[in-house]
Length: 137
Image 1: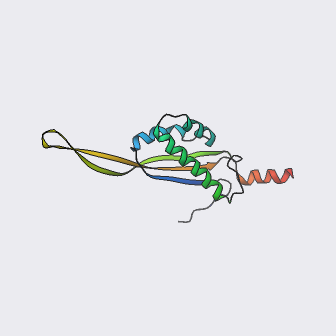
Image 2 (image 1 turned 135 degrees about the vertical axis):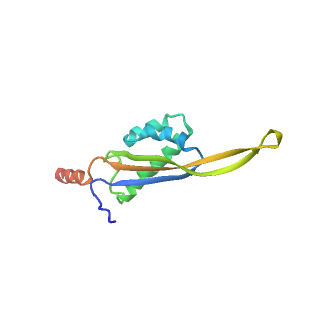
């Protein structure tokens, strides 16, 4: 399957794998920033008191950097109004441990992990802004 590249809307992906936290806890933070502009999302994550917010903030900064590198560092993320197009958290592998319990029994301990995938995309078309800069010169 050949995927056509749309030059006006460029998107970049960042993935966080095997984060040592349950996917359910991560989804509480992920749902806060879905569809928001990058600036709003960074502000929300900075003032969220969840541990997951620190992980997602680093992931968002990585996605912004990926977008800039994908465009050969010729375009700045600030000019093109980047937003969080897609973000979701899936369950990862689970470490299974046993803890001793009374009367010779054992309780199972499940240490959960998750994978987060984040996609950022620009709202302002690259070609439109390039054409506007050419006409100003």
